[in-house]
Amino acid sequence: MPRYEYRCRTCDDTFEVSRPMAESSAPADCPAGHADTVKLLSAVAVGGTAAAAAPAPSGGCCGGGGCG
Ligand SMILES: [Zn+2]
Image (cartoon, rainbow, N blue to C red):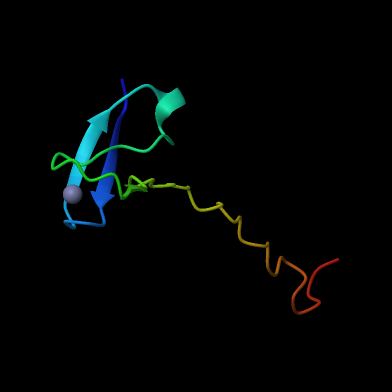
């Protein structure tokens, strides 16, 4: 079961709640009983591999006009 992190805006405490994903957006009471809580976004690291850019071929044998 995924765990979600919430922060209580009343006592400024953060807490985690294990709940089904379907209830992830449902309000969660803080351990102290406050209902004014906000759900924190867990650190979603979108790791992307850098696009491998192939270097454009430069030059060749005909740079100085000595061939061909
Ligand atoms: Zn609280």
